[in-house]
Amino acid sequence: MSDFEKIEQQERASFENVKKALLVGVYISGRSVNECEDHLAELAELAKTLGVEEVREIFCPVKKLTAATYIGSGKVEEIAEIVASDTIDVVIFDDVITPNQQKNIENVAKVPVIDRTEVILEIFGLHARTKEAMLQIEMAKIRHQLPRLKRMWTHLSRQRGGSSGGGGGYLRGTGEKQIETDKRLLKQKLRSLEREIKQVVSQRDQNRKQRIKSEIPTFSIVGYTNSGKSTLLNALTGSEVLVEDKLFATLDTTARAYQLPNRSKIILVDTVGFIRKLPHGLVKAFRSTLEEVCYTDVLVHLLDSSSKESLERFEATMGVLKELGIKDKPMIVVLNKIDLVEQRIALKRFKILYDNVIEISAVTHEGFENLHKALENEASKFAKVFKLRIPQSDYRIVDEIMREGRVIHTDYEGNDVILDAEIPVHLEFKLGEYILED
Image 1 (cartoon, one colour):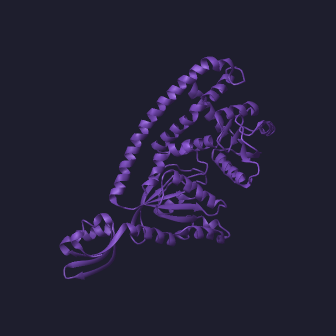
Image 2 (cartoon, one colour):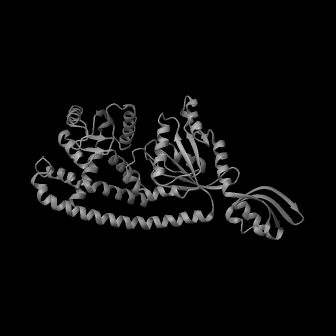
Image 3 (cartoon, helix red, strand yellow):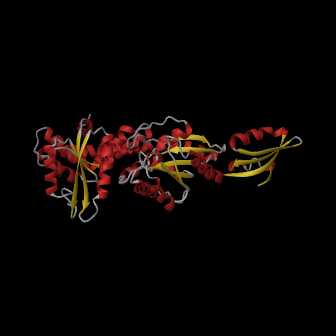
């Protein structure tokens, strides 16, 4: 095992023992502190997802951000005092900070300093299940670690008795050479991971092409993390996708066939949850997973309507979709968890701002009738209604229509079956000789 791998393993093991964290929110003086408080509350949930038992918070109003420590030396000293008095294990910034800023703050605070990106990466690493997700996470971690090698070697230098002032002589000798070696090895690993991911993506593309070829419309359930996407998929299809009251409980895309009450068939896809301040590097790393949404026919945008930040979270999800290049797709806005909402009048703002809004509870199934109608309405746009005359000798065609489409009305004339049926577009050419009229 290389020194770099040892450092990474030590950092991972040490984070598993973190019990108390100090969360740092930063906002420019003169702006509202409320947004900063909301974001820090979400960071606290992310930390708890990693097993952190207790968090303290500090809000830092600053006139301007500083290059050396991000928040200024006075605030860094204040953080160090809190760390010492409350025996804090780790300091977590809600914003992205540079490797140099991390190192400088650590020199004063004497505990590890990380940012929101590292927390999300750690959660992704814990919850990945499929090969693709694990490969994507490993690649994202390497990209995040590359510019931080010197900081990591500074830690190693201290463990071996080097100077505490940025690594001392150790880094100027063996350490610097090893940093270059590690950089080269990591870049080689990145290329290897990219090749593996291409193979996995190729297989997933084949599966997607099969679905596209079937002409069955695909509905992707998108939304902010912990909005109830997996719960909804399970409630509708009887699946057993993991459901936990945690941020990013599931990261892997799950697709299930589903027959609506009117017998229309669709594919429901549960996607990875979105989050605000999602680092651009993570969007890039998970692009091939999120691209499932790019090929969908209809978006089912699910929101936790019990959250006071539901509108902001809606906009955050729309921002990531825009970054993926997704626009102008039909969308059903689904307000979930209405069983937890005391004043439902607050939900009217969504109906004012957006079309096609449905209120449901994925747990109690309240509102499912309206949801089904909305799904059926969108699915009907991918099918046509025809009147067909089918001779008794070709009755197998009737069986196929019943399997692939929906029979609306049946009549008989002599030995022929007269059907009014809604059929998928891909069957139109095959059934051409039997079609009487639209």
